[in-house]
Image (cartoon, rainbow, N blue to C red; front, side):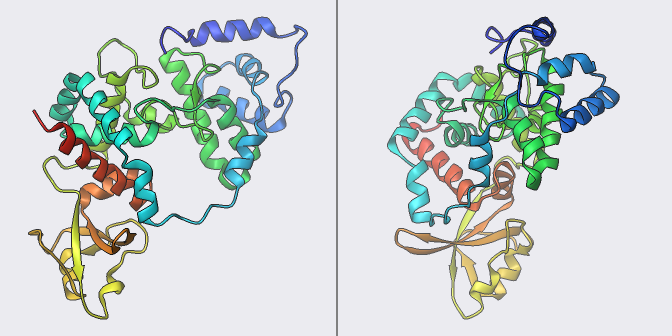
Length: 332
């Protein structure tokens, strides 16, 4: 990434040099929305308006992104169909290879942040197949398209666009060369720009944060994210529950926030073979598994995983993939 990218200053200089040349203008050239955004970035964040104007002249509005994000959500797959997408022999084997290759960095991340190596590897495996699919959209195009032309979530994506431009300036990278998902998520761990600025770390100490091509920085950044969101070292993630009685389903959590306690669920007919304190807050959920209904109590570390992606099935896939990695590789 650092070799592939020019500095922000060089990139802006090149863009200014293009002004006035015979070339196709970007779709946002002369846009009132963009002009207002540039004025804000100039006023509040110290950017030069002529530099941002030259930059946005090169931005392309992507209808394919608007089509993708506006498409009606497909029916959510049941757990029995969702799990096989992520828990595969290929993902497990590739994860063990990734772990072995970066064992030193993973051990250091576990020591410094308290996040198990297998969880870090699993996140990167679920997100991008260990860097194999980090996205092919220019992040500046994606965020600009969603900021200026997708009203339902314009506020969020405009904030991410602000964060991205500041990130590019801070890291001295060319904002036109950064690639990511159609929603602007970046690198091996698929951080949004705001998450990058808040949680990404220079884990190899070379003076730059590179989550695109540097697995060491990606590993440290995932561990940093989890630690900052409350991961507790040595604590479990989930507990399989047995339920009985007519009130059992009333214990299911609406959403992901852990609003019930183990004790409250006990009174509704929930039990577990694990020894759990009554005061532990949990997310109570049910999956349609391959062998029937599964009831689970998501413990505080489970909730941390859902802060990375707001989905109970995502969090369970990460957790179970991490278990498969341990089963195949073992621990030192």
